[in-house]
Every structure is written in C-alpha cells, then in structure tokens.
Image (tube, rainbow, N blue to C red; front, side, top):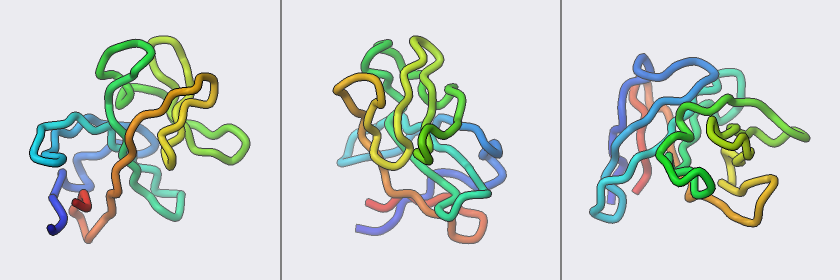
Length: 111
C-alpha cells in the first residue's frame, strides 16, 4: 500500500501541531501532526486522542523537549507524550505513532 497525502506543508504550523483526519486500516482517525523544521525528521504524527483526558486534544498541546526527547504536553492534564514513541513520560500509557514524511510540499502518511 502506498503513502496517503495528509495535507500540504503550508497547512502546518511551525513548532506546533494541527489535527488531520486520515484513513488508518480503513478507519477514519484523528492524527496530531507536528512540524518541527529544525529537527532531522521535521514532521511527526501521533494519535490525537489523549487517553488520560479522554479527548481529542493532543494536536493543541505545547511542543518541547525533556531530556532530549521531543514531546507534546497535553492541554488537559499536562502529561508529556513522546513524539517519536507515543509513550507518556509520567504514566504507563501510550498513544499510537504514525510514519509521516515530507515530499516536496506534501505531508505523506505511510500506510
């Protein structure tokens, strides 16, 4: 299966997240897509669902790093989720991560 175009690079917000709707395993899923142009990978995607706050809000979290781990802080209870592994740094819980890349101005989700 090929890559799925999520959006254009211009739809992203530098050093922040946006929510994108994608088909994952045949089901619509909300993804939190982050554009960090000063990093090697540049784009990251995790599920938008905060399992602790029980809401689709992670795309609205604040991006930062803790001990060189890129994270987003949930806007609800402030737990930090790794942008590379989806693991929560404070609780024994995680969110799915998704492989995304930039191809020119397209943001692609690998299926």
